[in-house]
Each structure stands twice: as structure tokens, then as C-alpha cells.
Image (spheres, rainbow, N blue to C red):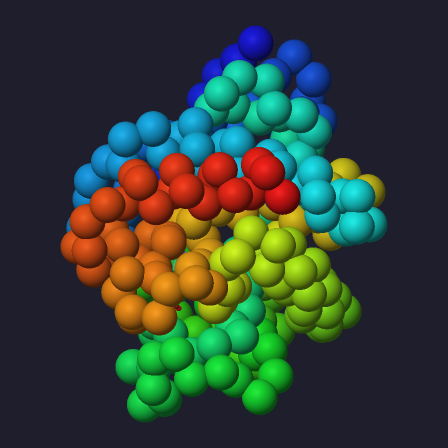
Length: 239
Ligand code: TMP
């Protein structure tokens, strides 16, 4: 049962529930890119991402990682723990793609020597700029201890997700996570893990466009977007 709307983001809406420690997260079909300069919808995305994220959160919990996930309550809704989201988007990269190629002149598809963790300031007005630990401290976005924990948590999540997606015949190129702090001060993986927030390439396809199974199909107008999400969902739910 959903209460009042707390917050509407680009891909989800958060509602209160009868329990102050529990929120309802409703996944939307809306898709945006480039800080919402590009807008559209992907048919059935809300249900597909909710199913994918629910499955992955449960997998990570079994692996011993703490997430905000409580339970899926409808095709496009899940109950989550009420947390305070840290205003830091944590990106982990295994292969060069997207913004790092533009920023550093790397070739798309170039494997990185080791996983790279990057922090971005979660601020739409500023276009989510890349920041360093010094900026995190200066802006009081997290304590130094939390920043160190965030990096380790992101690397742990990466290891588990790489193993998981490998079983789905998908290569985890990179992904973004958001971390929340619960009432006890504990860090929990929050937001979502889905083809909106991960770059996933089909292991069996060599063509650089055809292998893309994530929101880059929307960002780059590659077509067959919903079909790619559907295929990811099928493989995730079977893994
Ligand atoms: P980037 O290459 O554009 O920096 O994106 C890195 C990863 O983060 C990629 O998997 C897509 C994801 N991402 C989001 O989930 N939300 C965002 O707003 C952006 C810019 C990227």
C-alpha cells in the first residue's frame, strides 16, 4: 500500500508507507539521457528493471552485501529500507566506454588494468561532475571513513556482479551505484542495478553496436531497446 509521494526521480518514484523505516519504490517506463536533455519511454521498462533489480539485490544479499531491498510487491514496485542517499554517484569501470573515453582519450572497449572507481557529485544542476576525495571532504558529501568504505563496497559489488553477469553471458563494462545510510548509520546499496545503470555487452557478439544490451541503445539511438532489456531480464531471471 503506497502513501504519499516523497520524491520523483527520472526513473523511479518513492512513496512513504505505514512504516517510517520502509519506502515503496515504483519503477517507471520513462528514460532520460544526458542529464534529461534526451527524454523518451521504453515499453515495459518499469516492470523489467524492477524484476532485474529485485533479482540482483537478492543475489547480492545472499553474497553477504547489505542492500536497501526488502521485497518486490508488484511487477513494478519494491519495498526498500528508508535511507539517506549520499550525494555521490559511484561508478566502477572494467572496460573503457562512455565518459571516460571522452575525458581521457581512451579507446572504447579497451580493458582497464584493474577496476577503476570514480566519484561523481550527484547534482543535476551541475551535470553530475567528476569529483575527488578532496572535493568529497570539502563539500562534506561523506566522511573520509565513508568515502573509503564506498570505494571498497563498490569494488566488492563489482566482483559479485561480474561473476553474476558472466553467468548471463554478459560482460559488465561499467556501472553506477548509489549508497544510502540507514537509521543505524550502516551503508546500504540503494537505488537500482539494471540496464539503465550498467553497461552490459553480449559476450557472444563481436559487433560494437550489436553487442550493446543496455541504455546506450537509447542514448545512441541504436533501436531494439526494449528487446535488449527483455533479453537481459530473461537471462538474469534464469541465472
Ligand atoms: P558514463 O560513462 O556516462 O560516466 O557512465 C558510467 C556508468 O554509469 C554507465 O554504466 C552508465 C551509468 N550512469 C548512470 O547510471 N546514470 C547516469 O546519470 C550516468 C551519466 C551514467
